[in-house]
Length: 162
Image 1 (cartoon, helix red, strand yellow):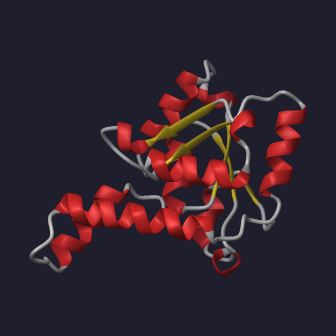
Image 2 (cartoon, rainbow, N blue to C red; image 1 turned 90 degrees about the horizontal axis):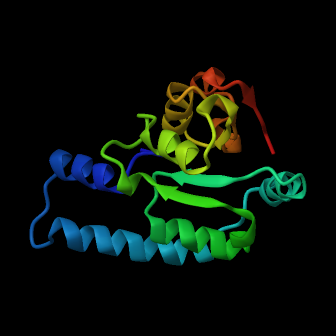
């Protein structure tokens, strides 16, 4: 379910195996709170800061367009200490459709005042790669090592193994 809006993940699992005594909102809040804690203790992907510093050095505008909630995006940005380098933060929580639909990427390109064809997306999820390609953007797949050989990542323009 990587790259899917958290609300859609919860709906999926509720439809698969309904629970009682918890509202959708309570489950969602618990997940967000737990994710914020987990993010604080996770290692940053090797090479991520180097890539951000490279584009920042050449004054190339950068954005984060994510399926995660904005609060989680901000937690990651704070942990990585990159807030001053990222021009736009955008979440699919503000979009009608999440990835694999291109909405979050198209809105982000618009906020950057650039054409989608002029964007380069670094993406770790298959749904994100599909969304970026559907938006008409070039994509660098950055799968986790255990997923590197999965053929679904081959639709990206480039594939990296930071």
